[in-house]
Each structure stands twice: as structure tokens, then as C-alpha cells.
Image (cartoon, rainbow, N blue to C red):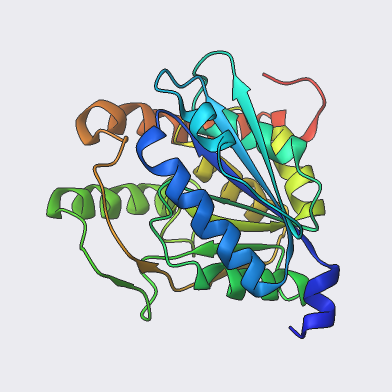
Length: 254
């Protein structure tokens, strides 16, 4: 992308945040500096999902200037990551809509590649894929998380759709039109929303591109392997049931 093209682009970066006071300030500074260096007209949307630790206040302290703007939206109660990202998409005004985790676990070079694919009309959806041959991790995930991730991927291949092996990577990018088509259809508010989102993208024939990512650091995930595995497994059946009943194709939501 040349500078003239990038100057005309507006990118919306959505950061769902729940009790992220310790990292949100540093993450927003990194995003601001990266966007400024890339010469992108960028809006950063922090969706505070009912935090109790002052996440919103910490985010609002970060100064921004054109071409970067910052908007902090606070949900009154914790509704789940899916609900937070969905709220961000509904508020976004960019040509490209991205969401990523609040601690910016993945190297921001993925942002440049993903936005280039969307703006070049080479994809409708671009997702980070930790199973990509070129992906690498500075600090590997614990073995039990790797095993649970593999098992979850196998279940998705069996019960829902194939060819997407990493649905849970915290970096995804959409064209604005694609995001506004898919997100209103979502029914899952928690961590399983990624699966529902990519399932709908695949079923609606969206062009999904997988790109390598570099995991810079791996803090303790808010997804608890034992506590959250069964609900996420049951959500696979819920998605398949809703699809077979045609709920995603009509205005009446289940």
C-alpha cells in the first residue's frame, strides 16, 4: 500500500477489555504509535465490558491526535467478549474492522498484512492462524492449552466446518460490509462467538484468508480449560442446531 492509499483509509480497531487496567495504557500507546507510523486514519474503540478495576479511566488517559482517535465505551455489566466485540462493530465507522486482545499478544505486523488483504479486495475476512507454518511463539502456550486447542479444533471440523484450524486466535480482520452483515446474526456472547462468526462467514461464502502471527507473550488466559470447555463444546451443537433450523436466515432470532 502506498502512502496516498493509506492516508485515505479509515481503520477501526476494537479492543474488548475486562479488568485490563494493568495493560490497557501501554497497549493503546503501542497501537497509537503503530498507526501513526503507518499513516493510517485510525479509530481505536475500547469496549470496557463491565470492568471493576478502572479500565475505562486508564484508557481515557491516553492522548491521541490525528490521524488516530480513541473512543472508550463502557458496558454497564459484564456481558462476555462476544457481546463486547459486537458492540464495537456496531459503533465502528472504518472501511476495515479489526479486533484484537487488550494485551496485544500478537505482533502488530499482522495488522499491516491483514488490512492490505482486505483493502486490496483479496479477502473478506483475515484471521490470525497459530497453526500456520510461518507462525511462531516467543513464549509457547502451556502443553494442556495446546491439547485442548487441538481437541476443540477437531470437534469444529467434525460438527461444523472445515479448513479453519485456529478459530480462537485473538486477531481477526473484516471488511466493513462483511462485519456489518455477520455480527448482527451472532447469538453467542462469550468466548465461543469466534466459532459462530467464522461458521457464518464460511456458510455465506466469504473469502477467509489465514495469515501467520507472532505471539510475543502469553499471559494467563481468561479462558479456564476445565470451566469453559464444556460450555464451548455445547455451543457447537447450538450453532449447528440454529443453522439447521434456519435461525440465521430470518429476522426472528432464537
